[in-house]
Image (cartoon, rainbow, N blue to C red; front, side, top):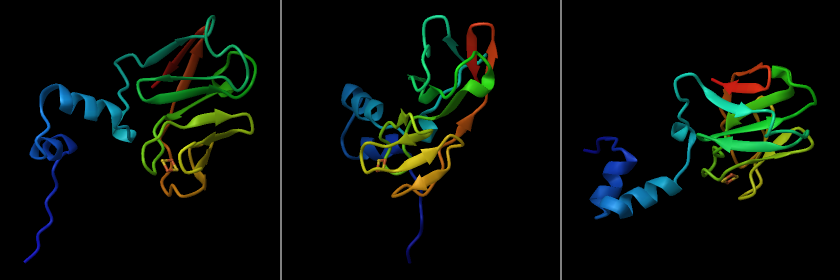
Amino acid sequence: MLTQESITRKDFLRSMGLGGSALLAVLASCKNASDVVIPAGGISVDLATKLLSVNSYVYSNGVIIARIASGNTASSFVAVAQACTHEGTSVVYQSSGKFHCPNHGAEFNTSGAVTQGPATKSLTKYTVAVNGTTLTVS
Ligand code: FES
């Protein structure tokens, strides 16, 4: 009789004989939505030095934060999980208002929804707030 068990990625890699620094290196290279870590107080970006031009973007804590319009208001920015939901490649923001995965070509809109496969699951979208020149993602 077959039973379904779940193990963590860490346990699986340990069962394969990977340990210590080798395990850490493998885990560091893997990205998925669960790799997003929003610190207490949120992710902060200094808008005086970053995201100065429309279509620019930065990665922080597993989140891609893009400027989609001019002005320092929350609606000028969007933040979604950086890892493509297909196989975890980091997405990039493109000027046409979409996030593109350079690995197999999946695309997502600024709400994180899939607009082109092979990905089938949306990117998690995060809340953006702006206070002066400080952007916070939570
Ligand atoms: S990893 Fe993004 S489309 Fe395959």
